[in-house]
Length: 236
Image (cartoon, rainbow, N blue to C red; front, top):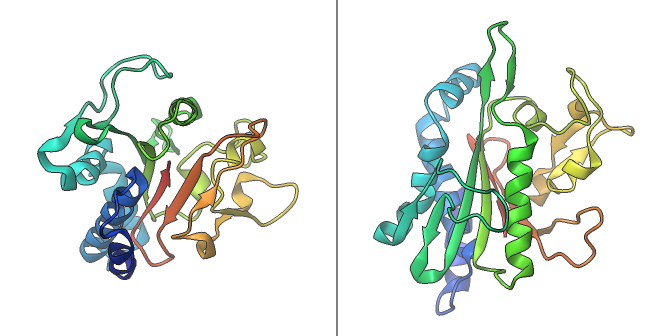
């Protein structure tokens, strides 16, 4: 259970000045426990309906920011330039100089009855670019990008666009896959349908090795196991 990791880390961090990822680790594990308690007995189709219709990005933001109480300022959905010059982040903790971007993965159903990822890849790329820029300017340990999703579909690629092109079975984009070190390729060449979770990499800091970025310091935590109702990826 996620709470076992919380106990272990609480002793490690006691007496230290925690970085943003250390705060978010315990917070996200508690959120996973919350959803496990609430939805663990549901069939996958029931959970999928709840994920798509009952929850949105603000629900996840509020849960992530809740432990910070009145220190947290929310600006979810505020407009602005999604680059290094952006002035708004989903969650700001000014007293700690923490800034957090949050994305929630879900599907929307078209008029034809097909399910698609709710956001285009560019939305995630912009947040990754923002985080890389902030880290390059000395904000490592102060900035984070969180992606959360319900574990209710067979493949991660059903929730986020990981292909080189359109279609039901595109080749996976190596440029996009770099951001997800917790995914395992089952075949070569790799189609998006050939990607599965590597649960052995969960709860460990994973380097994100980007194509063309030799000196970047981007890391990732993948939180969740096969039986967990909810998963997180924390980038910092």
